[in-house]
Image (cartoon, rainbow, N blue to C red):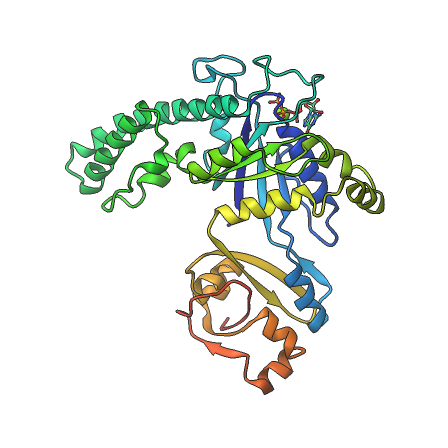
Length: 360
Ligand SMILES: Nc1nc2c(ncn2[C@@H]2O[C@H](COP(=O)(O)OP(=O)(O)OP(=O)(O)O)[C@@H](O)[C@H]2O)c(=O)[nH]1
Ligand SMILES: [Mg+2]
């Protein structure tokens, strides 16, 4: 399953500038089968040097990086849930995502109009979070009505879900996000059925002045005290840099003293929210990176690659990427004994290179 993240923020916060930069970066990635899914969905490769180094050892030149889908939507204003601005209907487009990227305007360019006529990152964050809470409340109340009817038939799962939804509604009415409401043991699908926006992990993206690369302290503190992460980026600058050729962009970055691309920080930050590990499949031609929920097994890893491979799973050969490089390839790794044979229940580790032996 591809990872999906949704961008939220106020109008003019810099969401589409970031999105455009990500889209172009994705489209330019060498050897990557780029697919435009929809105009407001970017498919962006997750950079990983380990794959490139490992592939160099086996001679694989067809590099396929794992990807993340980024969804851009229109800005939210105060009162969006009551129809202000463009309303909140388009939030439905990001209900199915795994995490939220919350773009916050922190630059002071007076030429860019702020919908409330002032630059106030914390005020903006609260406006957006309140609107997300209202949107979830609407959704939770609607779902509660439906589940309460099902619960009348004494279906135990519906009864448990109803109880949980009542807690969710109460929390939202108090202005608390769903992520603070404990999950129901007896209704394992309840969270998925509701897909609350405020139940998803959040990465704050401080859209700072060109040439800055620190998260403003107020935003960093807010993120830290709300169980969230934060990165800084200049959306406009990143968007302009992706329009230049690579050499030109590197010179520009050096002049501005920006060590890595802001986009890399955003993508790695989003990936880091999801509690995933990366594993690799590296053959003579193709080197590929994949993701898996932390704690996933070799059998789960096979399922990420192909359901047929999972169904025919016999055993896996596993080695860490750095051991494969140290051994100079699979033959050396076999001689050294660092290439191990593992069964379907082996718990995958970040950086494992796996070859699955399967029937069919
Ligand atoms: N100076 C400066 N301007 C920026 C920056 N990021 C975005 N802008 C400008 O702000 C304006 C709005 O940017 P967008 O990226 O379209 O904002 P948005 O969040 O997508 O806005 P909506 O789609 O209306 O919600 C554009 O004129 C951008 O060039 C930045 O980092 N610095
Ligand atoms: Mg936009």
